Image (cartoon, rainbow, N blue to C red):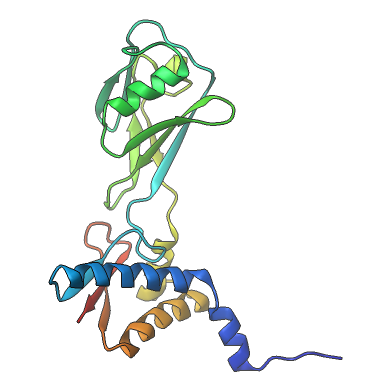
Length: 207
C-alpha cells in the first residue's frame, strides 16, 4: 500500500521543528520580562538561532598536560595574563586565566588534557580574536600572533535569506512562522539590521 501526504500535511511536518519553537519561546520570554518592567517594546539582537551576534571561538593548545616554568604570559585580545601565580600544571593555568577575568574568555581542558580557550566574540562586523606572542605559548601549544575567526553562525544565513542574497525556503518559512505567531497574538514584529554586525538582524516586537 502506498502512503501519501498532501501539501498541507507536508508543510505542517516541516514546521514541526525546534528552530521555530525555540525562537518563539526565547522571544516570548523576553517580551514577558520586558512587559513586567513596564516596557512597551522588546528588542532581541542576540542569543537565538536567528539573531546570534556573539559567536564563540574555540582555541585548543596542541600540548597535552602542559606545564609552565616561572610566570610566563598569555596574550589574547590585547590583554596580557600572567600565569604561574597559583601553580604550574594545567589546572593552575586554567585557574589563573579564569581568575584574570579577561572579558569574554573562559579557559578549560578537553578529554586529552589540552588547554581550551573559549572566546565569545563581541557583536561586531568581524568576529575574531588574536593570540599574541605570549611567553607561555610554546609550553601551551599555541602559535604566536595568530588571528582566530569564528565560523559564521546560522543567524548570518537567516539575515542573507531575509535580504534576498541567498534562497532558502525552510529558513524563509521559519521566519514567517515566527512573525505570524506574534501577529496572531496582536503584536507588531519587525526585523531590523543589527547595526553592530551588519550581517545579522534583530527582532523588534511592539505591544
